[in-house]
Length: 178
Image 1 (cartoon, rainbow, N blue to C red):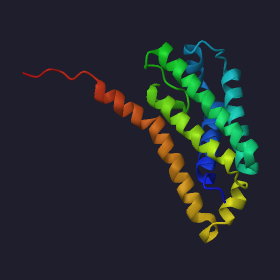
Image 2 (cartoon, rainbow, N blue to C red):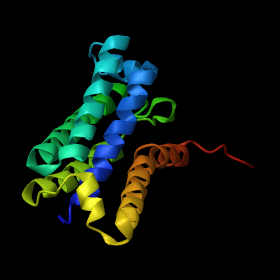
Image 3 (cartoon, rainbow, N blue to C red):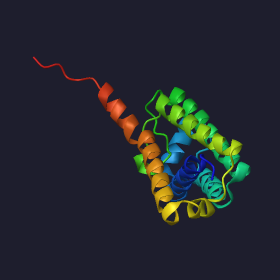
Image 4 (cartoon, rainbow, N blue to C red):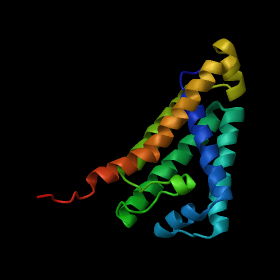
C-alpha cells in the first residue's frame, strides 16, 4: 500500500463532505463566490459542490494516479480561490467551504490547502489502490486505517474552520482596563 493512501483518502473524504454541504446548502459558498467576483447563483455553488463530490468519490473508488491528480488539482484550485478571497475580502470573508461552519479566509487556508495538495501529490508518485482495497490490506480489516484517515479529515477540518476563528479572536482588540 502507498504511504500516501491515508492523506489521499482523507483529502477525498473532505471533498465529498464539503461538496455535499455545498449541494444541499449553497448559501455560504455563494457569498464566498460573490466576494471573489465569480458567478454566485445557487446553481453555480451546487455545481462546484457536485464537482467536489465527484472528484472525491472517484479518488476513493479508483485512486491511482488519475484520482490523486484530480484531488491535487482541486486543492490547488482551492488554495488559489482562498488567496483571491483573502485579498478581496481582506480576511473577513468566509471561505464557504463547510457551510455555516466556514471561517474567515486567511493565509492558513492557503497553506492548509497546499499541504493537502502536496500529500495527494505523493499519491501520484506512489499510487494507491482504491480505498476499500487499501483498507482491507491493513490490520483489523482496515479499522485502524479507516480510523486514522477519519482523524486526519477531522484535523484538516479543524485547521480550516476552528483554528482561523481562534486566530481571529486572539487578534481582536482587547478593552483597556484601568
